[in-house]
Length: 417
Image (cartoon, rainbow, N blue to C red):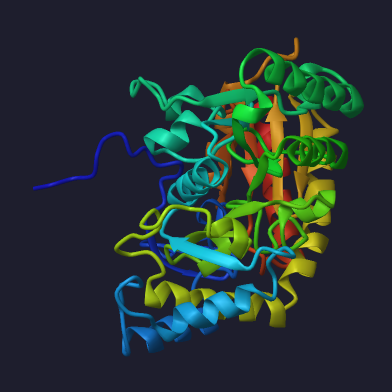
């Protein structure tokens, strides 16, 4: 008898029978309010009827058409539809399966297009679990421990995480940009640097938004030195932050974006977008893969884009996100155990700290587990796993936000009394 690897620890005890919208129903028939959304994946909720119908129809026509062998309609339609929402100038697409694959494709493109070996990532960033992307990940050592030697050519600069440093945002931003310039002088010369890889909001690193001044500073340095700005929109894209792309909050122009998670409402699909001119600089044969651009996933992604547009889910994410952030802050105001609450749209994190300001992993874990017992599914993140994050689907209602906040208030009171 085979079993799952013992390393696959479950965040909640739930065994799911089925899902609908913002709810999961377990095998005992109990309903759970899912504020994990498959780690930000089920953007249109669980089993949205239009996404299900599109996938069912496609399964009856073509499941797999390997896209460097034959072309299929869902892939062509998805590419055309993404042209309506992609940042200006990013008109060429490559599709893969996972976020890690997308980041690796962007890395390969950046090195081949510029002829430069090095990349700069930012402290607290998460880009994947493969050897290359784990080498670029600094949100926690658990992603790279035990697999050294890691990939070379990766240099890390600070992210303007004001709460971590105990500074105001301007001081943190000035420091981060100054340290980036110092990195150029001491570790990777600008002429040896192919790209910056940046999340518009740290995901696994603790739900920390960037800011306009920092992103503008990256764009300025990228333009000055011929460095590509790669924005990792895997968790922040497709309306999750209350704007279609996370970087839209900062009015910055990326050269490449990586996409996945909310793109296909739970079907595996990822990709990168760049200008056709830049994409053409990649080496022949450097882009491909057996399952990339799967026909069923592409059909689901087209339906997902339809639902996001027709149901005004970006606007809903903005409105419900404000409600969620305000409510989480109101809970935090009643206890010193939560040192900071931050987020963008439907990405909200509450950071637990001890009385002397140190990360409080134990209370965060207790709160997450207590919430699951009460029917609210949450996750933790951050370097010390002391941030409890809320990631409801974009279809979440005002009433469901209130329901979650009521449970959250009870849980925080319970674990901090």
